[in-house]
Length: 171
Length: 171
Image (cartoon, rainbow over all chains, first blue to last red; front, side):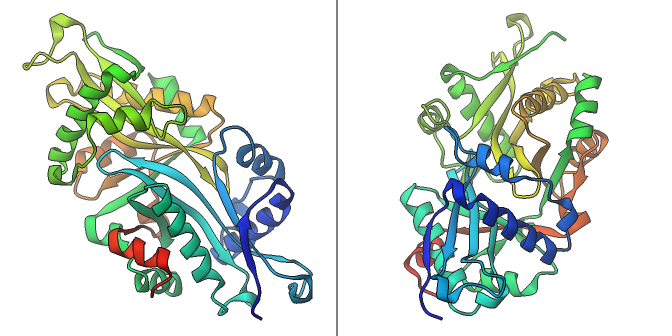
């Protein structure tokens, strides 16, 4: 299978984007954590100030997936800021459907993201990977990524809405 | 002690730049700060800012030993979780050492939480260095949890030559 195109996601793609988000979450054994809806994706990605950007991988109809999909991969990203080095590109999700792996689609997506990062003068691309996900860690390390948690001791923290509200009540 | 928490303005960039350097020194990495006051002005106060700032200010009679009234800050920006939607990322949180223990850090974090919730965010994320015990304790007390420890997520980075090579499609 040779042909695929990478393009900017459009509002009509939100159904496929959500499907792929859930597939990736299932792989991470976190499918029940996805509460995002198509409506959220539409509002948050295609308004005046989008919260995210998305690239999708599109195959011709004759190469559609076993369950008839032509959008078979995606990457969701946004821009962040490091007060020491400036703009960064943050890769939130990156996924290619299993039956379409090994054709260079993932590499092309990553190349496109890196081009975007360089073009918009970002000094770095950041993302998180689960430490048990050895194939992905190897994929990224082969491309020069470094593990900041291991090398510099950074730990990612989170505070959810319930505790945010408690925090506000205390002050 | 009296203090006010307010949104940062263009005029605050000089003090924000000063405090960024102080925080970098505390993290033993001041040689890594490349961003200047001018970069902050351009990146934070144009039509599409890459970050937002909050300042903690004390009255003139409580100014610091070197005569500063702007004694703490937080830098944050909006991100997106493909599982939960809108999120806020607290990039920096800092209070000058002589003004600690007076609730200023908590008040800054509370303001970021308020703004995040108002913008429809369901989580506040940030990173902490594993040796920074006093910060780790402060955050755990606020109800935060360590995603790196609990879920094994590692922060990864791709920058410099590696980013350029990736953009060119070299392996």
